[in-house]
Length: 288
Image (cartoon, rainbow, N blue to C red):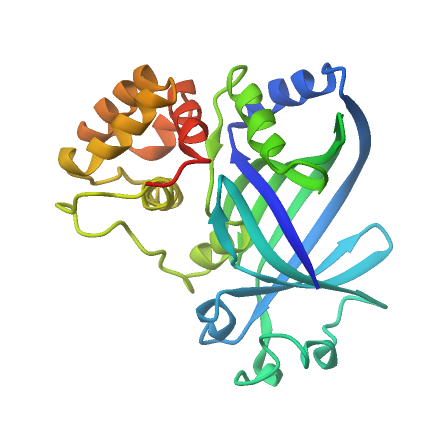
């Protein structure tokens, strides 16, 4: 078992191309490999794995096959922390015996597992060595497919391999000054489950709620992005977020974002402008 520390940014196809160009131009960066990844996710017809907040997949990368189990984890200091198990396979079929010592080894009918969706994409890797910190940047472009349903996938993930975890936020912030990005707390797996009709993400607390934490606010933005909706939030609920944004030098970005929120602008449209991602990343390492 390993612990994965990462920041995931969603962005448009055009902005992703610009982001990759910028990343490769940085003195600390070097171009890694490019590969096609085909990922098949499994669950029971009732979505038991998703309810336990774990995801199970088999990935094909070239002539290699890998079975992976991931927990949903938590969002701490701007970074996703997840537990992950990986095993090499001889082919595309699940090896249920490998799950016996994991969180899904008990209480779930493993024999009922069946494919529910796929995430298939091209991954360009960029390695960043900044002082004693090593970050693997994965630039993923492709689609999520569930039956006849399909949605585009354009993401950039910063994953810590060694060194200072705070550098993940620093690099994400630097990228956000170049192109619009969206700090996304919704994983590829959650997007797939939603597309397959097996997952209804939790929304913000009721509209009139006050005193939102940073994590609640960021998660609410991600859910609204996933569903293609506006984030419904009362002005009072944004007060503490606005104060913290001002303290972190993002008061102007907060003003622009709050205007869009109060005008019920759909989140995908807001995510395509620089202010939102810059605000998210300014808030990301803070707690309220």
